[in-house]
Length: 459
Image (cartoon, rainbow, N blue to C red):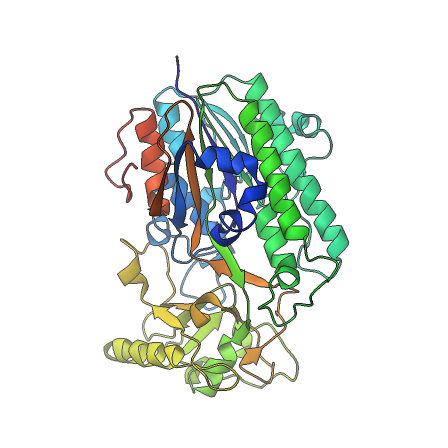
């Protein structure tokens, strides 16, 4: 009999919540844990959806992929950036390798699968799909059946989840999750497959939109608020969907439940470009009087040494002579300037001057290779307790309102991993699983040797 494996991906599901006090109320997660391997999953640097899922499915780090986040520099021009998608990924995924080995795959919603590429099987693209007028399935005709498979409109993602319309956002998250699981189960029933994988974005959306309502340590938490139980209730709904999915599988199917990273309370934001201005690294032609997105034409490049980007982590770029169009740092001084900037960032305190534990990393020290154009510094502000705000004109380095809309959570470097293999009792917990071990472990399940350039090793 052909071996079958299903991966249920849950973006941003957090070990402190899934393996925490709610676990007693999640019988389906418990039964998977009781018959296999489970533990925390160490994510990528940085721990963000793009590139983490593609790193998981290729066993390549972000540098080797050349994907450092949603936005990447296309050239050393100051304003030449692009939003990454599947066309920018050349590394072979698990399903690419399985296709060559005559294994059929069903893939749904895995980040960085839009636009879709051919495979031996079927694929539904990810949340990067601009809208449903774009072709986001392979084969294309699958797209016409998605709504029927989902039992209603198949939602690619929650629209504008950073807003104050909490009830509307919550309703969208619940509908999206229920319909994605329903569509996934329908495909599993009607198709012949060896490997199947889905990723649901709902956990990520609910954490960002509702963390303040569940975490007594959050500065905006109010006991007894109307949304205090929504994340717990959502986790229980996920557990029920997992149970329905597992029950629909052939009895000998192996099941992995995994997240790409976790979540944590967001204390605030560091206006990275305000910091660089204060420290003398960035000079503007004129200072805006209200929060304004930094654009290249605002900068006096002849007096600028560095600038930064916003996001869940900060990317800092140096203005290097001979590299950038108006570079100011001579090649001989790059190491010194970068080292000084690293030290100043790591010494940055909170609004009261107390250390927040920032970490500034050199890409060439954390990646096997740096393809494309990496940032010169990868900065975990407050070890990801604070996010990076790229705007200028804020009047302060420390912000307590997110510059891209309401957001209560940042990403944490540890997700979850459960591998349930029915009929093979081997319940044990492991300290930590690397995100890079997942792809070679899947290939090993099918007795396929992992390519030599994969970072991880089979579990």
